[in-house]
Length: 339
View (cartoon, rainbow, N blue to C red):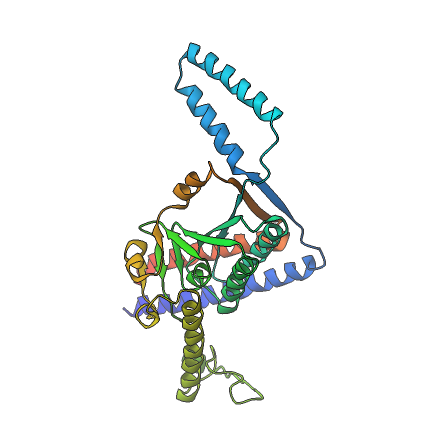
């Protein structure tokens, strides 16, 4: 057991050293690349046209040689007829946006560009479908994400959110803005709560005669710290701040979904969508694919994507993060430390 403890302590020290080195290199690369302007581009895809093309290809594949010839003639006639007729400019449109958010919610920067683009061309009869996939993250990031979706409603457009996998915590904060929430039966939703955790190395540092000095102006400029010694007063203030955020989270959800019993569902629990529907957390059990399929005949479906070119610092950061994750996993496997 002593060997395992010593090895685990050595592993923690090694990981800490690696993280410090990696973060230092990332900071240097970021500083060098900071003067370069990030550029992105908007990608517009007509999914209705793609759907029709796929439909034609599948139909042709199921026909024999003679039937394919007849079908090709029929398609040519229809195409000529469409060219002669005036296009239906009054046909409503469905704008599709995908949002897959991480802990830091950095994907909101692309979301805001996509929504701005949609709002410049959308009409009152159009609809916006946002596929949200996120387990939540930082409060300010997902709060901004929810505000971006609110822009759609403020312009009088109908907003639908589809949850195929997960929209919990901050992800659900965004989803609840919609007039309608659809979810796959086994999607995870809810988790209307707030959580925060951090390690504290104070005892370890004391053991090795390392002193940490923290100077602040303002009683609660810092509450809990990673390296300093925490006291009950700091813990109480920290919990008070979490409770304040939770109350605002509950109020936000209540304003957008007033028919829900907020005290029943704001316990931090999450549910599969099939159970969540009974609680009013989602409105309909349905995949986004099935919803889109039902819209192709009556609406023009357009997907809007804003893609940002990744710089050297971003590529290095992603590679470094992946390397650190693999190293930690290997150490855990070696030590057989259970989660």
